[in-house]
Amino acid sequence: MVKHQPLQVYEKQILLSFVTGLYGCRWKRYQRSQDESSKWECVWFMILCSSFLLLLSWVYFWFVAQNDFNEFNWSIYNRSGEWMDETLPIILSTAVGFSYVTFLMILALFHVSLGQQLNLFWLHKVLEYFTFNSESSPFLHILALASVTALSWFVAGYVIGRERSNLQGTVMLLYFILVFLVYLAPLMFTCPCIMDRHRLKARPAVIGRRGAPMLAPENTLMSFSRALQQGTSSVEADVSISVDGVPFLMRDHTLRRTTDVGQIFPDRQFSEASFFNWTEIRSLNAGQWFLKSDPYWTVQALTARDRSKISNQTVCSLVEMLRLVARSNSSALINIRKPPSGHPRYQNWFMDTLWAVQKSGISQKRVTWSPDTHRGRVRGFHMAANEKLPVKEVKQRGITSLTLHYSKVHPKDIEEYLANNVSVTVYPVNKAWLYSIMWCSGVPSVSSDAPQVLRKVSYPIWLMSQNAYKFIWMASDLVSLTTVIGIFCFQKWRMSDAQHCNAEWIVLNAVRCHSNRDVNVMKEKLLFSGHTGEGE
Image 1 (cartoon, rainbow, N blue to C red):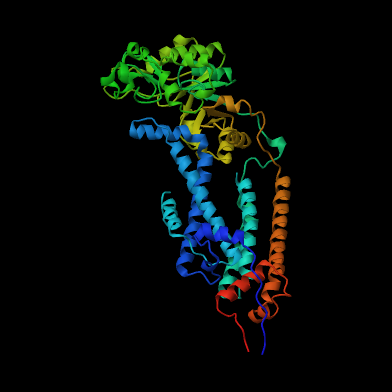
Image 2 (cartoon, rainbow, N blue to C red):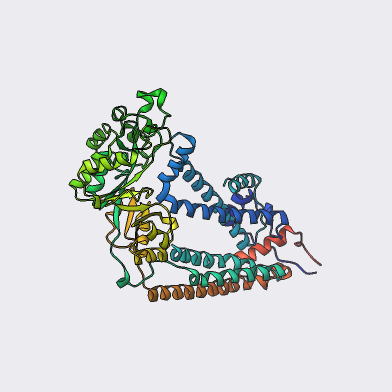
């Protein structure tokens, strides 16, 4: 009769209990299983991966979109008629959803690496479903490189820790295809800041877009004064014509958002701004809304004196703004909104604007007029267009400047325009990283809501030569490849003991066998599968 030696007492597996408990609510040892995951659980794992990738793209999108938060809120206001900061709930919900899905993704990868059966808890499935449906390049390459390198630990654990199968070969093949694509991704990248230093052009001039709207209410005299104090070379303003022919500065079609017209003229708060006379417009307060809504989250940083001054701001006329610019020896870009049909000044708005420019005393050479619809009558002014046009058409229309959104401009376009003596202004540029990219692209000027931020950028945030980037690219790939190979070798060595331990060997040699996690797992599987007992 053969007498078997008793199995060893199993050591506590705190990490394994933590992972399986949080992922599938399986806190007890007997609830866990190393059997193959069901097809249904594999489907949920694929949904989890898709949710993670979708939210990762969503997070990156909103990170880049910080530059355009105010533009986004303004577009929502034009549709709804109510001003609210719509970006805050989006950012909060995105952060919560991404953190939650990332946590589940890490737990799932640990399951795969530890050889545990996937069994997502039903509550996680419900929350993941709602999360899924509710919803540079050089640096991205480094991030992708780090991600695929870290992923090798879980892939190696899955492939080496299981019996050979076609699925393992497929996983291995797909992983190395992904690694190969990431390693060669820089071949498809184009980044303007990868260039030799001697090719860097002059620092782009900064234009105060509606003044300095982060420091004072937009299109007010205080806002333009703050912009000029921040070293802007020019200011940009939106011009409307009052019913009595006075050009004034207003971005919106109505006065609701930036004045207290709802209190002074409640019956006319939805009326077109240009259908008010100048006396009525001048009686409105144009600063209280800024302190109340805090559109750029900057009010808390203002001094008590600035807040007091802001609270007394009124709507600014074109003459007042141009006189301020003339005293500062700067220039101005005016975007004129033609009055609607039926307006008393519909036929005379051009002369009203021209008269205001002449009355201010500013040199016409310091004024850029947009749009260029009356280029035949406007002489002595620089003409600007707000659309991307072929060079041939630009010359035919006598346009000297283009004002383009930063997403619609390419370094090659800029080079072509400048070669034909056409200046390019890019808007809105509110972040230092975007300003650096525009600088490397050769843009001569940018229009910004944040001149106080761009003033601090005395050199591009990062600038790298082609040779330096190629060296970093190849070195990073080599380090990653070496790490991946090392991880696979380590996983092979770590699991080699467990692969040689069959059930009979464990029972007969439990005392002599060196205790490790893999052997204990096999003992546990043997114990609960009913293979233990005494034999004869």
